[in-house]
Length: 399
Image 1: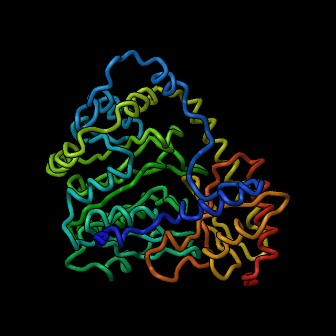
Image 2: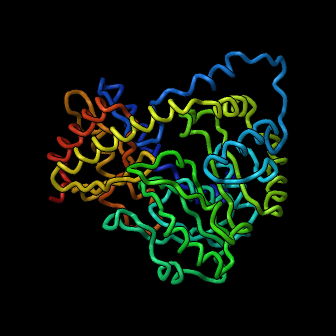
Image 3: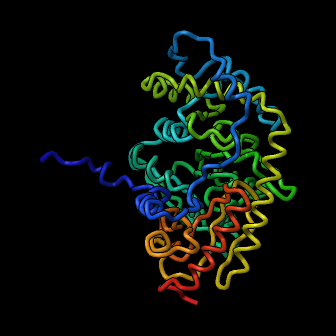
């Protein structure tokens, strides 16, 4: 029998989606499953984006430019000005989701065996992107004890080797909800300058910053114009994950011209997605105000109620709509499966994402789960109550 490739064997399963069969089995038994495991908002997609698709007049859906529609790129570049990010349409590449932006960035700038440092826990699919690109992830651990603040510069320097070529950050962070401050980013910039590294900045949750905190883009770090590659996406901003449209942005012209070759190899980004995304830029501010208020209410409810449960610690996330929560359990993977397979409360149960899948260092995250507060408060109330009852009877409880 022909063999599977080494990359195929090394490619990890999604820690977010691997429990789906157990959730489906629970549903088939008539149990309602509250999905706290995945960042799929229940917020309505803006009408202006939906109308652009509904009212489409084109009779042929053509290939777009490999870099994306110029009308969309120009409009997107203009929209970044409100964040004080000054870029041009020629400094961006529209991609098939933020995922492709990261993959193309890696393939354009890194060789097989090159290393990138990533604060952990990190978005689990970074592992997959790295394997596809032949890149080695070197984790640097942040801790729930400090609410997942950026590790010190000294810790970064300890793991830099001649193979280190870049640092990856997600700000605000998935899975922790931590928002890196301007001061933390300036400290990180010192390392980037000192070792002449790339800084890959995943900023897809830019709008989701709470408690008066504001987002500072890596694109605005002085002296790093040739080092920073920003990745962005419309998925969460406009609650339209399925259109699969993101972008890669950099002022480094050599990176853009190299990335363009990879973009040409896949022909073009999604046509319908670009049409919806371009229209979504016209979304009224009232939409974002409503969304912001909703997420603040959900976060406040979730953090307060989780911290009332004995043995549970939930940091107060400053951004995005995730939090990593410490539970009194022996093994978060076992618990996440058990609560779907062997537990129900009032004909309902909960699906969470074991945090082990967001750490690269073996053994970490064994008593942590990622929770996405993307459900309305009524559902969150039922989910938290169910989680509390489950923890009281879980056989592997540690408290």
